[in-house]
Amino acid sequence: MKFYLTFCKTRKKFDKYIKINRVRNKTIIDIKAILEEEKINLNNPDSVYYFKVLVYKRIQTSLEKNKDIYYIPNFNSKNFEISSLLKMRDLLAKTDDFNLLLFHNEFNNQPDWQNYLFQNVSEFTTSQIIKDY
Image 1: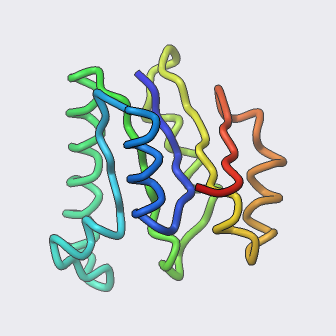
Image 2: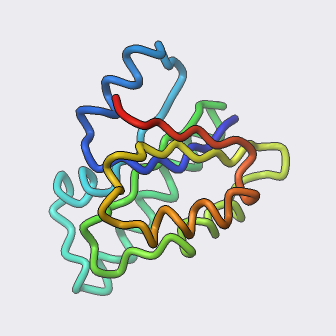
């Protein structure tokens, strides 16, 4: 099983990547889409707990079905921290791959995010940096 931490702000570009590379046997966990679909208010502690359980359940189900996971964080969140995303490795078994998929041009205006990822690239099993799609 492979877990991809996907840095892509535009879902359309990511869908194009999936289609062109013919990615099969996958689960896409798009945090922004989940928040919109479920109408979750992150200011309410009960909603935050429900949201965390929902995401964890999707990850757990994918692990049980041995599907690759593409995790797309919500980059618009004011609480967004890359360091907390790297802790997701703890959810995975030692044999599972923890990969980075970075759409570079979408993060040109946030060089601090890119620098942090490049400094911690050793945390990932493999890294794929895509200039443009």
